[in-house]
Amino acid sequence: MIVVIIIGLAAMLAAPTIGTAMAERRTSEATLDLVRLLRAARSSAAGYGRAHLARYAAGAAGGLGTIEMYRGINNGCNANNWAAITAGGCNGNAACRQWLNMTDYTRGTHTVVMASVGGFDDLDICFEPTGITRWRVNVADRFLDLNIAPNGTNLRGGFVFSFQRQVGGANAGVLRRVLLPLGGDARVLR
Image (tube, rainbow, N blue to C red):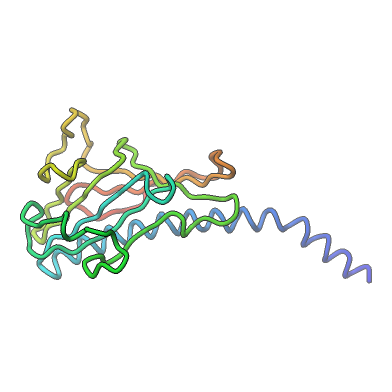
């Protein structure tokens, strides 16, 4: 009977630590899932010979953030009618290949928030089969392949996304970042 009581007490003491560890694991999974999605978009563009769009929306999913990947109908970022291709979002849209929704990583009071480190609330990143990465911050604008944003901000060669676990709205745990260099493969920053 004493052994059972000791095991029960040990389990009771370990429960909060296990919950925190699982929440950190979900944050790490979200980070790696973004790397996979961006790499898939880049390699699919080359493999299918069509432009692929990764659309980031900071305000989506209750402010936690989403990224959706769409396959274009031709090889040029500016030649595709992305408004028609992305109409209605990913729900039932055959052009939508993958998506990352931060609500999928939320359990209880632990949430995971994805943010653009450059301060972009909405961002379209387009991968062409030639390996060129183009981007825009306004869906009405043309795609650019410049290292300077229209507001004069230097991109420093690419985009950075951060993943932060929150408990009750306050930051907790390790801040994780993903780098997408212009013309390169996405990777986790240490």
